[in-house]
Structure formats: structure tokens, C-alpha cells
Length: 251
Image (tube, rainbow, N blue to C red; front, side, top):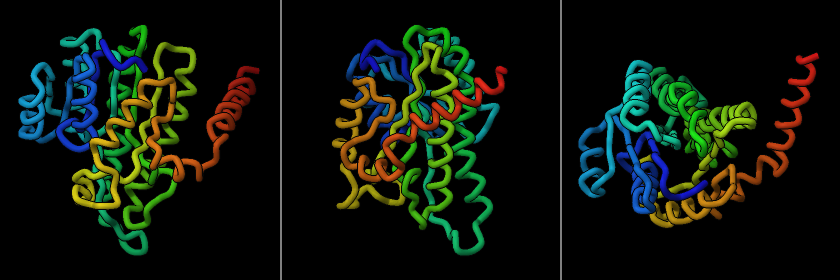
């Protein structure tokens, strides 16, 4: 991915990894627009980064997504990068009754939200010469954390969707990227002070370095051992499987 002269929209850009990516990409000479539900957080990021823009977005609400997508296309016709970063992470009880509100909100935010946001912008992105759709998943999509079973499941599902979308867009101008962080010091699960978690600034610096390559999966060094658990030939197998199906149905 080229690291400058893009117009980039990042969901969940008011804090944590989203803010870190937004600020790093802004400094590299990109027009960055962030979104989130907490206006105070968005205002703080904008104040600290002159030239950056923000829009309020409820990623669980279809009407909000469509409204923001239309606004972005009108106000930023050169928009060529979407980074689906917004997410929530809460502990649950897979061995017992799952709280239905937690279940619904986690799936709506982490899985349905990114799919809907991409759906609202993908036709616009196809018209750009150098377009990217990015998703922030997690190494927990490859090796689930039982204490956050629903969160882990949404990230595994999003990883699966990314592979399908990447295959379906293989002949377009749109590249599909997956950013799969390890444990990072953010607000999620009160990890800001966790000594074993990767410092946010280190994660962002290493992630930007990988983004600047042709990698489809953006993995920092700490994430690679858990990603390898899924097998190094996963995508090749998935591509072959889908290609055979397309040929079968074309007969």
C-alpha cells in the first residue's frame, strides 16, 4: 500500500489502535477522516492533529452508516482507503448463559458493522485507481481467548469474510487488507497498563512499516506465532477451493 497521498476513512478512530493509525497516516501526508460515537474523543483527536477531519458514526446503525457513506463520497470524492477498525471487547461466559445484549452488540459492532460499512463504500472504491479496504481483526480470530468467546468468534468470522472478499475483488482495483493485532495496550479489556501487552506506539510503528509493503495480512512480529497456528497455506487452499467452485458453476 502506498503510504502517502491517500484519502483515508478510519472507523473507531477516536482512541486506541484507530487513533494511532489515524495519526501516523496523517503525519505521512494523507487526508484522514476518523469516525466514532464519542464526539468528545473525536474532538480531542482533531484538536491534536490539525487538518484531520471527523464524523460521528454509529457503526451498529444501518441508517448512520449509509448517511456517513453518502457524506464521505460527496465531501471526499478521492476517498480510496477504508479501514474498518471500530470494535468492542467484553468478557463473556461461554460455559453458561450468554448475555443477549452483549452478544448482539458485539456481533453488530465487530462483524455486521464492518461488512455494512464496506458494502456502502465498495462501489465508490472500485472507481479509484489505487483503493484499499482494511479490517482490524485480531490474533484471537486464529487462536480464540475463551474468556472473550464472542469477541474471538467475531474476529474469526471477519477473517473468513476478508478472504472471501479478497477473492471476489481479485480482478478489481481494490486490495483487501487484514490487520491482525496481538495484545496491545489500549482501552479494550482495560489493557492500557498491561505489562505483557505490546505498547501502542510500537505496534503502530511496526504496522505502518508492514502496510508500506505488498502484504495482504498486516502482522507485527508478536502476532506471527499465533497466526501461524492456522497454517501457512490457508489462503492458497481457499483460493483454489473457490476457483474450482466458480469453474464448476460455469459449466
